[in-house]
Amino acid sequence: MSVKVRFAPSPTGYLHAGNVRTALITWLFARNQDGHYLLRIDDTDTERSKTEYEEDIESSLIWLGLDWDEKARQRDRMDRYQELIQKLKDDGRLYPCYETPEELALKRKTLLARGLPPIYDRAALGMSDEQREKYESQGRKPHWRFKLDHAPIQWDDLVRGPVQFQGQDLSDPVLLREDGSPLYHLCSVIDDMDYHITHVVRGEDHVSNTAAHIQMFEALGVVPPLFAHLPMISDKDGGKLSKRLGSMSARDFRDTEKLEPMAIVSLLARLGSADPIAPFTSLAPLVESFDISKFSKGSPKFDMDELLRLNEKIIHQTSFDDVTVRLAQMGVPDLDESFWNAVRPNLTKLEDVLEWWRVANGPVEPVVEDPSYAEQAATLLPPEPWDDQTWKLWTDRIKEQTGRKGKDLFMPLRLALSGMAHGPELATLLPLIGSEKAKNRLIRHKKAA
Ligand code: GLU
Figure (cartoon, protein in one colour):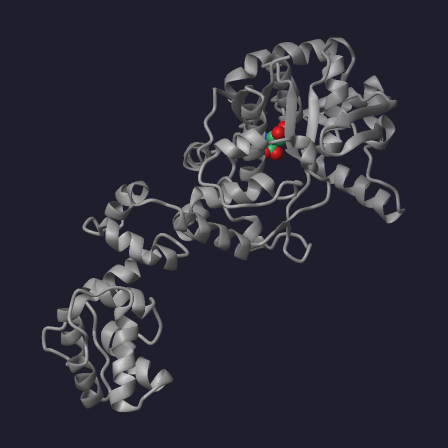
């Protein structure tokens, strides 16, 4: 059987972390199996769906390195949905309901107050023709529900193992709105059928939907695909992801946090699986080692610090050639390979390089509180060429000559050389600043660069 999967985001917001994970795991599954990856835009909610979000989904996937073999949009398939709606109506599997949202909310509330699950009571099925005519004459339009069989529903979930539901424990899902337009459940099942999807990989928030979908596939006369439901990500203490993290999107990781796409990929590809999380610089080894059965059904913990550590390790493995274009876009086209190699071990994010570059090349506003110490230190600077030993050589001499040590020794030097009390390691920085600029900054030369 050749594998065909789909990633089916709704373009009603930016692609958030949970969706990135579904997109990635579905993609790894497909690529590991030499399968086919369909990007399906679930845009049945015409009011909330926006082109801007669809574009964001695509650019985020591209940024993450996830390509797709085919793309489909639900709004292009309305005629097809109508055909099958007619079939389901003819077969008696779709029935009209006239309850208003307020009436439904009240039923729900009453059931919950009595400690009962809020399952739709199928009152519409017992409606008399008279009642129906009355509603119609009042101008009410029906929404339509799928009539579930009250029978056991089961499947072998690739992540959760055997799953079982009873049809009677579920509400008949609403498949059509009052205006006759189809909703997610119906479109999703028809698409999965028409595009010959073999495996549906999605979040565990869809588990009970799957139970209903299985009966819908059967009502349409096809064998349902296989299912894998990934657990929701929790925060590092096991609680629900905070609003900030939960709504963090791929574009936030890219544009605000300025993280490497492979850091996100490295974390999300293995979060919750038996394979260890490690910093990967390409997708190939993740594709190679991917195995959906290694994912557990327990909720994995997302830790921003872990993401930053991965980012740092990935940056430390990134060659100059791989960042030249980005450095130029960041406004430092002259930053060369030796500079990159010197500062790279000190970077957590690529953008950190900018601070090093500025401190090395200026402009720097030296802070000199004790000019005579700074001047004395300037005279003790070793002759060039400088390397990563120069700082030690220099400060040893200063210690000898002045008797200063520790913070008293180095803080005035840091403040004079960088203008800041914190910042890049001076041992690395000093050779990049060079003798002339270092002297100028220490003696507060008028044109300190
Ligand atoms: N559009 C749905 C969602 O984003 C798709 C779920 C599915 O994969 O079927 O939740």
